Amino acid sequence: MDCNQRPSIPSPELQLPRLLYAAPAWWGLTTAEDRLRLERFHNKMQRLGFLPPDIMSADALVRDIEGRLLRAVMRQNTNVLLDLFPPRVHRPYSLRPRPHSFELPRKDDRNYISRALYRHSTMAPTF
Image (tube, rainbow, N blue to C red; front, side):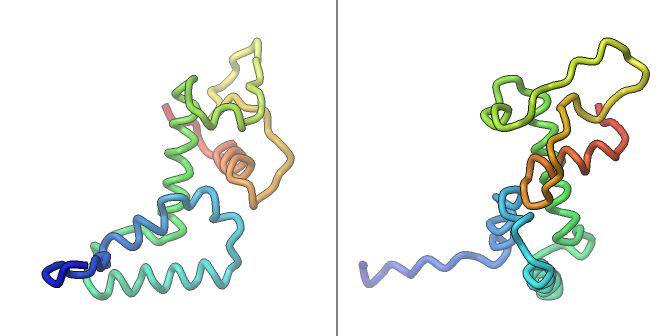
């Protein structure tokens, strides 16, 4: 290392996006204690001014990220995650709009796909 180079220290405002980047994959494997620790970190970042005061909680941020990822998979027929989702169900009737057209797998809150499909099957459809 050159003596004029400073060591690379990540800025605090980048820590939360780094933690939440792959949150849909690992969120279901966390315990209540882990989620509480993440929420405390989120609150501390808010208090120190690295996050805006009106930002959502960590849990709400993860739910939002999961919802956006599910909508991206549903919109794009070429999404690489589409092969991991259950098959689509063809309904010959059209009584009401559905939040998604996937067959519901066995419920498993540790698995992102199952968690997202069940969570969004109870919500109003988004277009």
